[in-house]
Image (cartoon, rainbow, N blue to C red):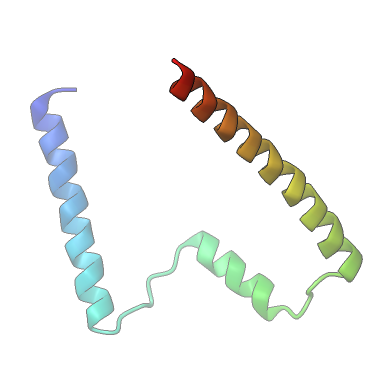
Length: 82
């Protein structure tokens, strides 16, 4: 990337950060993305699923997390050895 493009992206990032900080400090939180609206509708719908579904999801998450930890430990072990 050219230096000019990098500088433009940095300036845009900082500008958006200041705009967000300014809006939030004034109490304006009305800007909502599509993802936030979807989460809000799920939370307010009252459909919380079942205990069984939650238990299945937790089991899947546990397997995924243990795999991630195993990969990270393996990576760290290889870095230390080398």
